[in-house]
Length: 192
Image (cartoon, rainbow, N blue to C red; front, side, top):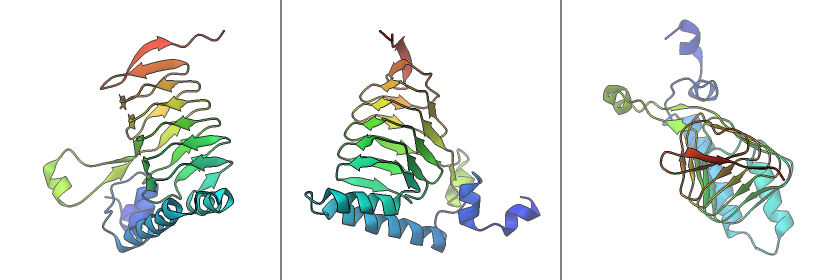
């Protein structure tokens, strides 16, 4: 570890994609704050859409227009950025230790899990409690099907479709339909 890295806070390490300790007090505080806002959102009056949007706006790093159905959970919130017309159905979880960026017109079906976090393969490093996180980017006009899981470091191209139950551990090209565990390209989507 370099001298410069040693001087960084655990949050700075996390945001730079370096190994960090999620047990750090500042990160615990940030996660607790996100959980409080998620709880408020999940319990909020469903007829008060304006109030719900205000809670999401206070949580996310950026949103140009998002509607999320309760229940919703995330780790930090400030690493989530949505484009215009973002929609997430019930039971979506976004573990955003690294940036999660959604383009315009993205739809998430119920039960989607998106996780930027990963743990070392080395058991000694894992026992120390270290974690790393890699950004996830979702392009414009993407539909992610029910129960799909998007893993750390993945980029999903514009106009792609992720089938229900897919586990995406590799980049997805634009206009591709992917399905399976692990997800594989099943076909390219034709534009009529």
